[in-house]
Amino acid sequence: MVDLPLHGGTAPYWLVKRMKNLAHAIFELVIDEYGVDGAIKKLADPLWFQSLSCALAYDWHSSGTTTVVCGVLKSVIDPEEFGIGLAGGKGKASRNTLSDIDTIGEKLRLSGEKIDELKYASRISAKVDNACIQDGYQLYHHSMVISEHGEWAVIQQGMNPSNRYARRYHWLSSSVNKYDEEPHQGIVGILHEHVLDMTAKGSKGCRGMSADLAKTRPGELERLYKELGGRKKVIMEGQRTLLDFDNLSNLGSPVRVEDERSRESIYRLPKRVNWDALRVAYDKQPENYEQFLCIRGVGPATVRALALISELIYGEPPSWRDPVKFSFAFGGKDGVPYPVDKRTMDETTEILSSAVKEAKARVKI
Image (cartoon, rainbow, N blue to C red; front, side, top):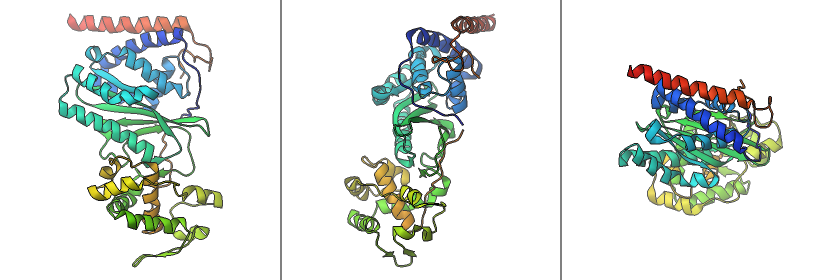
């Protein structure tokens, strides 16, 4: 497992310049060896990406391994040269993802239908990691890597200001069967005890019930929600009794809760629910959970509210298990585990570049 503590500051110019040169040489070699889709697959691998950041002489476990490395790759990987391109980035750059996809799609000669698919993948992956996995990390970085064949990977990162750590989420198009069920190639970060994970296979029943609830009249949902918030006993015909929150241990939740503080954390009701979004959901009558997620205004609070109603009233619990999964070359910018060896880094870049040129020359012969 890789930790990603939040580190401030910026990468120095002398290092970024070398990172760009080395990254260009590495990806010439990777694409020559594995092709464009192979390069996408490697970037979607959390540990390969982490190793790449180490090879580029950035911090071995800093939050900056994501933002700086993706920024460097975006600046040196020209779609017309490499057959792949990077959209989005950190902060304001992430909000340009859709226009970046248009630009890359045009350079790679992708169809309008494929570009629309890429935009949807970008939006839904961000929605899933922000709303369906409630781990306390707010997304602030979103990068999408696109190949000339229309394959893609998403590398996005969230931060938790309270514990001063980041968490990185990796997606790969060829591995996504359903956007709302275990779609990740991997998630990197520190492990937490209780996380609402609506993407888990164990949350399938809860997702289905939530989608059904989204088609219920908003007034009825508000009534159910207020009953939960008021800690009243709710008896539904054909359902078991919901005891008040002082006796949550009798609810039959799959999670073992050892103390009152943990109970309150798990079953914490959102202070605000977007009832307007649920009115839109009622009008649209989504066929499944993914369609529900795509409704504008559906966010973490709405997802959590329906998940709690599904579990505490209808007996369809979500998963509360954290889905997080998971060599230094030239040193790191902060001297960990040792200062950057500039000479070796430059020599390695030259060796890789020469190797690629020689390999291409042999192919022509």
